[in-house]
Structures are given as C-alpha cells and as structure tokens.
Image 1 (cartoon, rainbow, N blue to C red):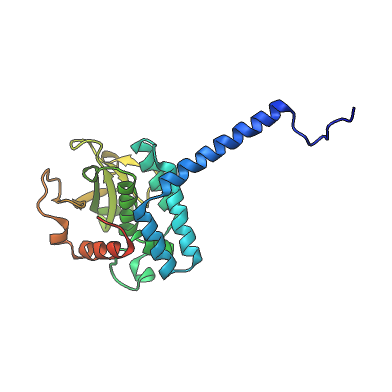
Image 2: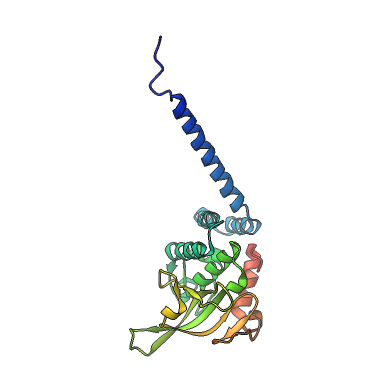
Length: 235
C-alpha cells in the first residue's frame, strides 16, 4: 500500500482545521456586522472623496477598533477608546495643525492630520463612545484649568477632558490625552472644572442642573456639528 503524502492531514487534524476555519469565519462575520454602520459608512465615503488612501485606511482602522469594542463592558470601551486615540494621534496645538488659535476638529479631520489638541481628542472619544451606544447623559466634555509646573505651582492653562458618569450622581472618571490611565476626578487634583457640556446641556462649575443648551452658548460647538453633518455624523 502506498503511504499517504506527509502533507496530507490526518482525520482528527482535518477536523481541527475545519473547526478553526469555521470559528474564524464566524468571528469575521461578527466583525463585518458590527462595522456595517450607516453613519461610519458615510464618514468613510467622505474620507474617500476628500483625502488620500492613507486617511481612508486610518478611518478603517478606527472602524475596526470600534467593531472590536462592540459587546464589551462600558469600562472596557472607555479604556480602549482612550488608548486608541492617545496612541494613534499626536498632540499638537491648533496654531501648528490648523494655523488658528482655536479650532475644534471632527474625528475625520483629526485622523487626516493625525494630530490634534485636547479638544480634538475629547470630541473624537465622545463621538466614538456615543457610536458604541454609551448614553449621552453619561458623558460630558469638561473644560478645565489644569495646574502646570508642579504641586506648589499656581500656574494653570486651559484644557479639556472627557468625563464619564456611570450614574447621574457618580463621581466622574476622567479620560485625558495627557494622562494614560482613566482616573476618578478626585485623583485629578491638578484639574479645576470651569464648565461641562454634552449634546443636550451645558453645566457651569459644579451645578447639578444644566443652565443652557450648548448650541446656544458655544459657537465652536455649532460649527463642529455642521461639519459633522457634512461628513455623515448625526448628533
């Protein structure tokens, strides 16, 4: 009897290979379903029309990251979203990136430049978490004065971070492009909140009720929303 070629798998091995292939195809199917998002389809199409293939690939990397976060706990989604942008994007001032004093970029614009300042990081993280299904009332873009120059310094500078409130009365957890780990607000003694906002309201200082709608007070937010709509985002 002629022996089977050495490369021919035995029956148990063949079954193992077939099972692994089925698992891989199932995982791919889940990823494709999770990434089949009409909003992000429009954003990717905008990238194809406005930018080169490198920018399109960055958008696709972002989409793949979001697809990988689907089904995870909110704590894991916070961590992964924070890490994704902190690693993918370089921190640079608006004067360098946009030749303007203060410009609030969309996630697509930031990925195109692969650079942004604190507001741009916060906006991208906020919109990513909203895209993942995190409720708007759990998130706030927080404008702060950040202490610089050490513990005993009196110097501060304007900064923005993203706050996550697990419940309306919870202590917020802070997502920051300058600090890698997500910490409760009580540990960020270097930050002094000025006001915060999300899509539905604006809060001054530590107020428990909103004093206005952000579109009424923040012209840069209104401008940002208009550009987001042009790119396919609906907020």
